[in-house]
Length: 303
Image (cartoon, rainbow, N blue to C red; front, top):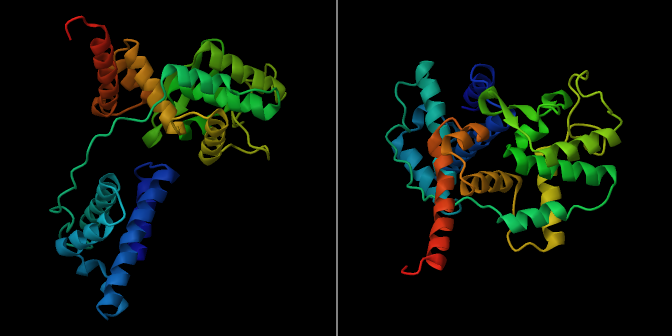
């Protein structure tokens, strides 16, 4: 079964164009299921051949979901079930098994929690809290300004090269999920901070004639990672004593929420965020509607 998992992951990367992060998530989910089968076999004093692909049926998968329910949220369980469905669908297509045992298993009902975001005042406090003129301070200021200005996924941000930013036109080219390229506008403040950071790096006016030079570097002059961005943001939130913890993806939520609160069209925000479906973008309207109701309750004389 482990060999089949590896073959499936290779297909996701080579044929589907999935990112390394997505492939890693699929592998972790499928290997977790494989480990569960092995433990279940030990519990029944069976041989390890119990972890055989042909022994898996709907009952086994339901038992696995019950096992996951003890320590996982419904969203996590639904994601793991989706990974199993895709895996078994692949095996059916390849003729390894006759039918997909996960197809008839119902997905756990998921709630729709409001996205985590910062109010405008807290967002400005976060951005203004970045002090200092060291190269790291300049880099961090440029990173947070860019995340809030564009609503990029943190993986998209750290994957950008210097040449992807058009300072004259105020645009940036990013590679999103499924290797889909899109162009997003970048605000003047974010462009200014990024320009100052690049100047300190000695780039000067050489932003158009460099190939493959990462936009943001770590201490070892290599490409910055998404985890490093998360750590610097976590550290800054603690320093400023913000009441709401926030992640890099939370800044993406903040961007979308503030845009919709200010009257931006839902489909325009969908395009900016790079969502394939407008349904994904619509969840931000719940936050905006809550804000409208709050204003209404405070202001209307006959509420």
